[in-house]
Amino acid sequence: MPAARLPLSTTKEGVMVTVRVTPRARRDGIAGTTEISDTQGPACAFAVRVAAPPVDGAANQATIRLLARTCRLPASSFEIVSGDSGRVKRILVRGEPDSLFRLLSERLAA
Image 1 (tube, one colour):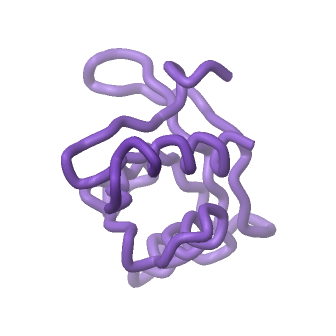
Image 2 (cartoon, one colour; image 1 turned 60 degrees about the vertical axis):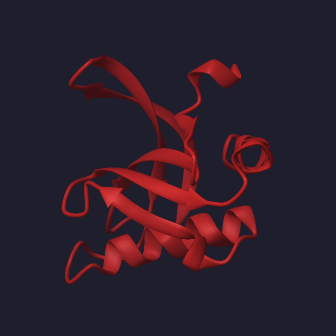
C-alpha cells in the first residue's frame, strides 16, 4: 500500500495513528488497513484485533500494548487522544516525527 494511504500523519509531538479496534478477537494482531467512514469522507485505519473485551478500558490497554510490542517502543509513548469509547481511535505516538513515521510505516504496514 502506498505511504499516502497509510493512516499515519505527523504532528509536532510525534505521529498520529488511526486504528479500528475489534475487541474479543481470537488473538491479538494487526490485519493491515481497512476503509472507515470519516466526517470528511472515506479514510483508512489499521485494523487492530485484540482478545480483550471492551470493558473498563481493557481493549484500549490491549491495543496500546499490541502497538508498542509491534513497533518495539515503550507503551508510555502511546496515548489515545480520541475514540476512547469507540472502535475508531486516534493514537498519538510521541517522538521525533520523521524517524517515527518511517518506523511505524515499516512495522505496522508489514
